[in-house]
Image (cartoon, rainbow, N blue to C red; front, side, top):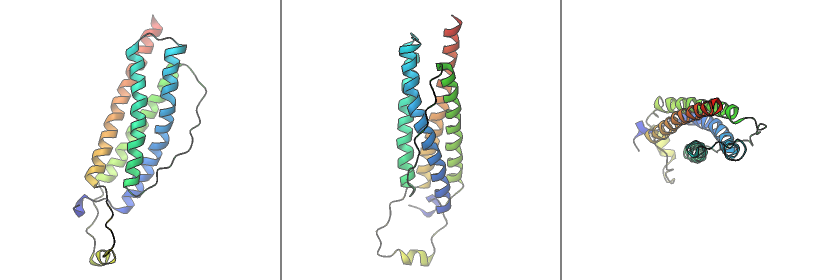
Length: 179
């Protein structure tokens, strides 16, 4: 890997910290979407299958995001970390979707900030003594700066589409409640 396509250790630590924040939020989102779906299907008896399918997809996407984020944290030399999320008492679906919308917006900004750190952080070429101390050691496979940027850009884009889906779900809820 070219030296210009590496990320500094300080930047890796910052990115890992942000991604661990993301893990915390993603796990909360993962836990809430099935609850929202259950409420839609069984309790509120919303009859739109498209609406239910959209909420189910949001939950699946969040699970995929958590998996991608955990792998990226490990690839950057970090350890994925999160605490058990306290699940709020069930409220109406509309309020839960508004809460999820806030989380999706937060995730967009976290991934954007992590991407910006990666973009500003090309590692400097290793010096002679740095290379000497690594002689005879197995080279560690390192994720490239461009790959980190690509992953974070994809996550940010996904979150932006999640925002639109949640906003559309809220619009559908308002339409349903007006009838």
